Amino acid sequence: HVLKNPKHFIKHWGKHFAHEELEEKGERIRTFAYVFLLGLFTWTVTKDISENINRYILINPDPLHEGVKSTVYSFIHLLIPFYVLALVSLGAYILFLSTSPKGRSRAKSMVSKLIIGMILVTISPHLLNFFFTLSENVTKNILTQGEEEVTDAVGTYTGVMWKSWFLTVGAIYGVNALGEIVTETVTHATGFSISQIKKHHYSWGTRGMKGYWPVKVLGTLDKILSKLKVEAEPGRTIPMLMLSITLFIGVYGILAFRYLMVMFFTLLFPFTIFFLCFDPTKKLGGTLLEQLLLWTFVQEFYAIILVAIGTGMIMLPEDLLGYGFGIWPLTISFFDFAACFTLMLGPIILFMLLRKLLPPL
Image (tube, rainbow, N blue to C red):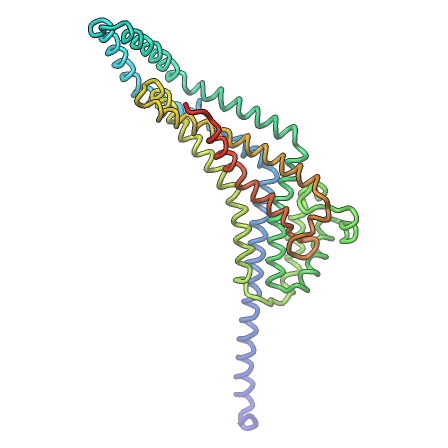
């Protein structure tokens, strides 16, 4: 049949091979796009964390902002009539209904408390502004005093994200290809050979790399990955992808949630003072004040934890950093993992600990 109709044979198998070649090229392109976009995401996040983590930690709502002030003052205008009503009621009680010196003394004490509360409610935006400024200055002082430790802690965190991405590349293109990728990217990105890095113990993400190498890495990989054969489905990299997402959410998510909670209790601050003025609602007011203090102090917790992580990683013996998984220099050590999860969960742990230590209001 082949000899009788060679054109049909050539046409049939030509289409078959062309189809397979197109499928293979399509798979390589899709895989490369997945790896490259994940690398771009990693570069964007690590660059932002390295440059802006201190600023994100120091962010507090501005109580004197027009939008915040208008909302707070609308609440104040809502509460003032209740203060006036309470003062009038107490005045009437003292003048006409009080029959015992003890009751009259308690009523007079309540009047003083209400007057002080009304004054504090009126100036509550300025009180909060003073408190937030004080908290920011304390946090800034901690970050400034431990600048080197903070840099090392952030370098450890971003380094784990980059190592996770490289291990993702290795899972897709194979372990042997990963060795070639590491050699090419490290040499092109840093200007150092592998032997030099081993000799001087340069760390991925430290100031030794000056923060510029990720851009060069992506450019180098653009040339390398397109030539490599895909050995595994990207689905095999889901664990590493989940690690990157967890690290991303662990920093941005907690800082964003903390900011929103501080904003929420900032708006409720007039009610907090109001509830503290009355015995039946004093417990509710104390809870609101406690939450405002704790969520504000989370920024101090972050600063302390960054310094603690950086100090611990600096003092840690080099040989202990080899215990983990991966391929040198992409090994993610157990201490790296511990540092990352301490940075994510540490502020919340300190939050809960301080909550138990605070005296009841």
